Image 1 (cartoon, rainbow, N blue to C red):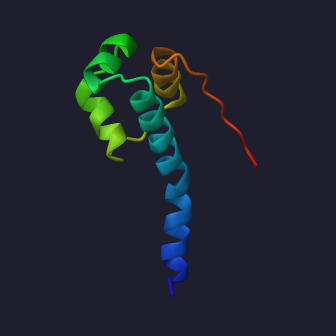
Image 2: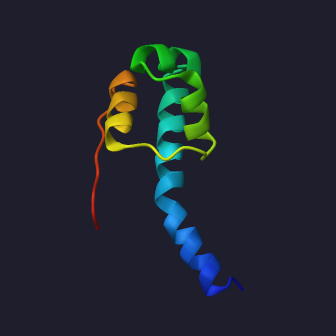
Length: 79
């Protein structure tokens, strides 16, 4: 059984992991490498790598650049 502290941390990271998963999924489906995405978005490849490994907390502006480079639409919802 998970502790309450662990469940809170897990819930906090859920959004971050979903963003990472969505970006990776879109990039792989479009057969785009990190290097190509870096070139298209104007974002350093090392930064994209940190994002994909969960070591970077992106801004909305950053995510918009990634979405545009992947011909995708960024949608933010509060539920």
